[in-house]
Image (tube, rainbow, N blue to C red; front, side):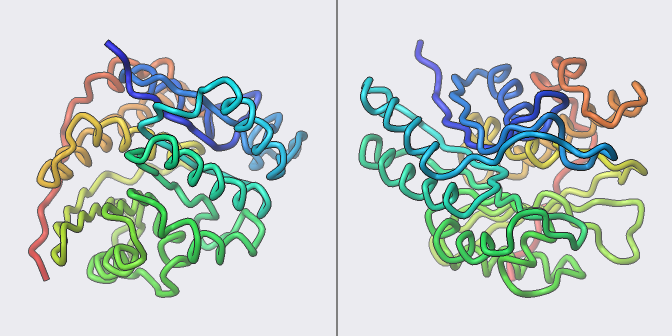
Length: 294
């Protein structure tokens, strides 16, 4: 039996688990063939006190890799494209060209876009990428997975309440994606809770679910990349619109388990290898709440 194929275009670090290092293993564990392309190659993630070394890849390098795949008849058959951290405008423009080529070869390919730009009010990509994401990339996405700050950037509106998060999802649907998951929202006055909000639009109507998870008092890296990969995996297994709440529950359960292992180990880099059982078969403890239609 052939397995679904994913082209995953995002960052790579020698040490630690962010970008493709955070996404490829869980996808493989859950039954996907994954072809990773690295948008940057760094020694470690950029939050280390001693800095980092490495290179940001440019668009011509991505094009060359995809040309090589095309020359060998390997562009056909992808079921999914997943993109994460991209460090240059030329590379992001090249991603748009790759999507067009892939859809010419496999019209049903689904694009999962994690528009990695920043978090906590801080932008950590070149500012020029925002307009490219907003105006050119988002309209091509089937599924969009921003964090709360990125959803604010893409919509130009603040998210200070659940109602505003729901409204932001609707605004993003208007740009093209049928599914929007805001992967982490820290709302004022709810210091012990993180909100995940999923929205699926079928025709003119949207169905939305909220998942409230305990907020851990530690900063982690790679969790957004892991979340996007898990959303892809579980949406493939539970594809119907009414199952999106179940998808959210399983993704949240795996995330909580990974972070619990990480805290127990006293690490900042997430413990993916130690969490294989919970990635395969998450134990759901927090239920997604279906929200009333507006």
